[in-house]
Length: 260
Image: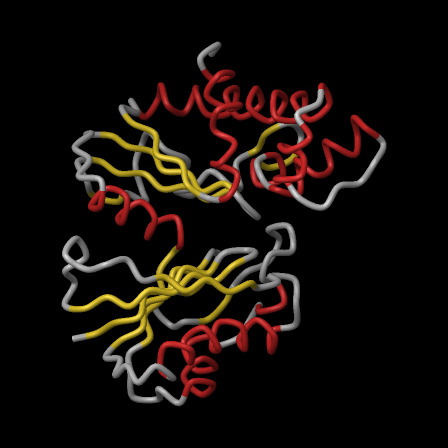
C-alpha cells in the first residue's frame, strides 16, 4: 500500500511517498514546493493539488493521502476553520479542503485524512527519533506558533498541566497572544523596529550577523524563555523538540534559554 504524506506550512508544501508504513527501510523521497498562505483559496488548493499531481504523474498508484495542516481546522470533516491567527490560510475559512483537493486531483475514491500539523510533527519526531521521555513538548516555529504535548508517547489535548485549549498559540503574552510573538512576522517587525528598515526573511536577518540582527534573535529568545519555562515547570517537561524554519536559528535561542 502506497500513501502520500503532505506537510502544509506557511511557505512550503512538502510531500513524501510512504510504502507499507515502513519508514526506516525506505530511502527518503521528498518533494518541496512553494506556497503562499495569504493567497486566494483557489491558489492554495492548486499548490497543494499540484504537489499531489506531481507524484501521480510519475505513475504511482496511491491508496490514501494524509495531510498535516495548521489549525483551527475541522480535521474529521476536512473543513478549514482558520480565522484570527495572523492571516495564514485565513482565506480558506469555510472551504471544504478535502473535497476541493479530491476534485482537483481526481482522486475522488481515495481517502484524504487531515490532522494538525504540530501533532503530526510530534508523533513523527517521537517515532522517528525513538524518544522515550515521559513528558515531551513539541514546537513548530515558522509562519505561526505550533505546539503539541505528549505523556508517555501519547498526544494529550486535555491535561491539568497544559493550557485549557491544549495549545500555546492563543495563550496571552505581552498584551497579545503567543502566536503574534513567536512567528516570522514578529521577527520581521522587530528588525524593522530596531533598524528602521524592512527585510524580506528571517534567513536574511540571520545572515547579516550584525548587532541589530543579533538583538532581534536575543529579544525573540528571551521572550520565548519567559513564556515557555513556567509552562515547562508546570507540565514537568523532560524534553523539548523544535521544528519549523525558525528552528534553524537554534544556536541563538539555546544560548539565551540557558539563562532562564
